[in-house]
Image (cartoon, rainbow, N blue to C red; front, side, top):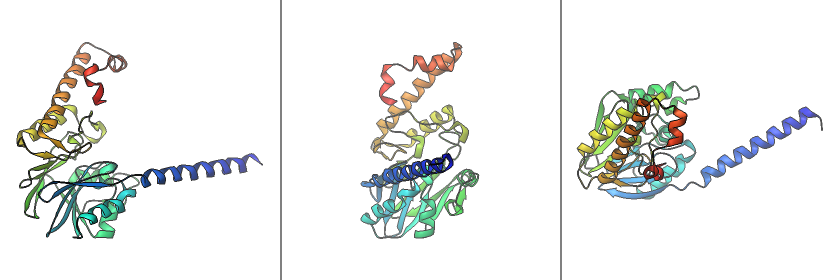
Length: 270
């Protein structure tokens, strides 16, 4: 076999295997649901957790994970209710929270709401689909009066990203803070996307101040949580940020800081 033909054959085989692996990965994902409080449910699959408000007024969902999971997400919602999926709220622009936007807009006729910067950052991506862009955007927030609840969407700046929104269900007493909460693990803070450690801590402190002791929290990632869980995450952030700040003051290099680490008490968060 000539070298060029061999190269094409090998590349074709590798591409086919890679595509099969990717499809197999999505086929294995199970999208599960659980009731939270009142009209609110929580869906877990792969990517950001999905909040769902279900009732006679229709369905509102918060985030929609990855595009290959769109039909599974729709199916899991359909198992709970056959009402129309009227609205989506994107908590920020990352693909594991916005990936199914286009499917729900084009197939289900869903209207997508998000902060101005969510649309801006999605539109700036070279490979974006126009159908994935939010239709209704805002600077500070928006309120839905739906399914017997008052659902407040609020923008908080410079935390996980500069496009963060949190969703507060007043009557159900449920908070969906998006990726301003990674339950039981270190958060990812998107510095290139406008996020900051100090802003993340400030925003989480503000949110915890809003909560009741029995508030239920749908974290961006991880299991359904409580105010006490959120406080534990905040304490971790404050302490580890102080440790790193101390390293910087001492003039320690990044490499040495990573080598030293944060101590055994935070190993489980890694």
